[in-house]
Amino acid sequence: MSASSLCLYRPLITALFFSRRRLISSSLSSSSPLVRVWSCSSSHSINGPTPPPAIVEKMEEQTIGVAKVDTLKQKMELLGILCNDSCVPGRYTNLLCPKCNGGPSMERSLSVHIVQKGDLAMWRCFRTDCSWGDQVFIDGRAAHNEVKKMVQFSGQMTEESLRLEAPREKVTAYFSERMISDETLRRNAVMQRSGDKDIIAFTYKRNGLLVGCKFRSIEKRYWKEKGSEKTLYGIDDINDAAEIIIVEGEIDKLSVEEAGFCNCVSVPDGAPGKSSNKLPPVEKDTRYQYLRSCKQHLDKVSRIILATDNDKPGQALARDIALRLGTHRCWQVSWPKKDESSYYKDANEVLRHMGPDALRKVIENAKPYQLCISDQVVSSDKHKPERIPAS
Image (cartoon, rainbow, N blue to C red):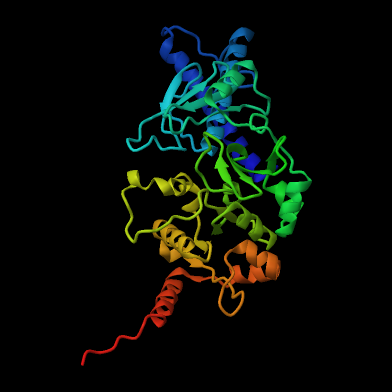
């Protein structure tokens, strides 16, 4: 049995035990003083008569129902939904949405509903700039008509709704020129839009669920599917990572994987035009909302390697990320020289021109971010014109 299976099964056993105790105590409190209390033991009782089969069947049915609900709640917790005691079958409960955190006012905008039988739970965020909706089953069944209607109403993405298919010859050839293999494309669920030979689809997934999609034409035109969640690309690859690599684009994430590192994520929106040395208030820091939405993953990381582009926007991005995640745990790569007057720009350029081994060494040789900042200051001072003292 796997570790993940143990995580799911142990609470089930605990829930089964305590739910039976609750059933007994509820019978005591709700019945008259003369009511007969039946033992739930599977062995024959020596202190009293055996309960009628109908009562035993009803008690077992309620016990299984509680166990189902506990399992559904545990599955929702894996997605960041923290259920409370008010989440019971047949009711709608408003909770804090883990995707948008309720916006600036932190309102409880996530409406959660567990069906009466405890077979599935569904939810939707009613903030217009979020609208996250999904569902989990007690098992792996496909959604029935009622849930399908809710998924369509909530705008939940699927590969079918986005008309995605496996990449074909033109797209795979494009990546092959960039030294990215078909295996890496499959592992990262890189696809293309059906009917469009040159439209690449980078699928954003969280806990295996499709939460966003960025399209890219081979001519380098980008756009996002409406309703895409703003999160790190490849977030599932750093679930249990103590060290991670952050890059500036999806192709760079794939390139780093070719060098042997899967613990890599990409920012969703590239680099900013400029950065600030001071952190803005949280409600105004909308550009980096994706870092807050991935806080649960990033808080566990002890070392972050910044492998952003080797230009001013890339340096600004590295500075912004380090400021928000802590400069003390950030390292930065130094891209190698291309010729006497220029340096390689990013991970994919190094992969294409120098190969995966060279890219791996560049990443392994990353320096603490504070040292890199000091080197950049010294380098910029060398290029300043010499000041002529006043006569």
